[in-house]
Length: 280
Figure 1 (cartoon, rainbow, N blue to C red):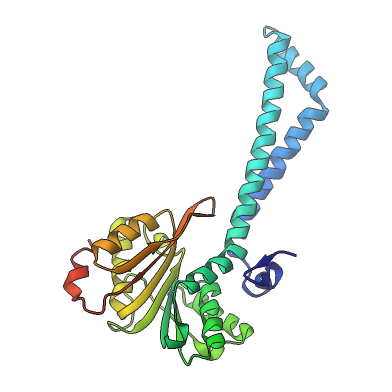
Figure 2: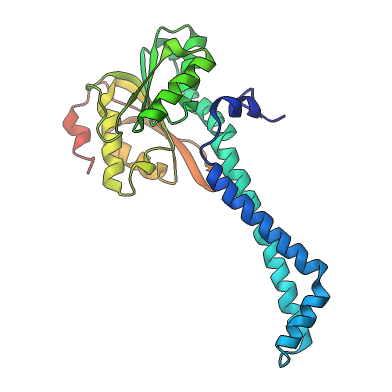
């Protein structure tokens, strides 16, 4: 049985499930369809070739053989690629998310001192509860807030915290990443996993969300973001916003694209104008 951060994949699935079944099902169905067509072409190669020759008598037999063989190869390769894509999406939505949650947690040096943490876009609660488990492990009296734009999702994440035995460390609420419902300088740590890019395709919307994360961080607080394809751009912009200790992790393939984690520290002596001027 596979392991992800010291936990069985099936244990993770039993608690969190996956929100990618439609994508996985679509890819897997087409993979098996292409594989079936490829096998059909291989088994009935001679009759299919004979039928093609009767419909296209002007074409030479070697060319028809090549076309049929090439079609079978393309179908086989397509089936393999689609099956790999389905596996990668399923892996990314379950064990990889847990593994990346552990890496994000490791970017914060002292969880015992953390009193307030925020997970922007908590979704099913994988990162949210991983943070809560870390707080519990460290014996901290801190709490982590999960924020999601869908109220039902936030409530479901809170139920999963009870299953994990960390309900006393977790609070969930509905809200937008573009206008976080918290005062300035409220959190010691703010995290977000594969969420900011989904909130809008325009760069301005992503910068606004990052600006909100910086706003609610305490001076000296730590931000940790895992996202797809945009992180190098995030790191550049965070540097322009005069954030400190901006670090980008190595590349990890998730959902068939490259992803990175970026961590940073909000300066202890920085005015709002220093970073807000670089949001747009």
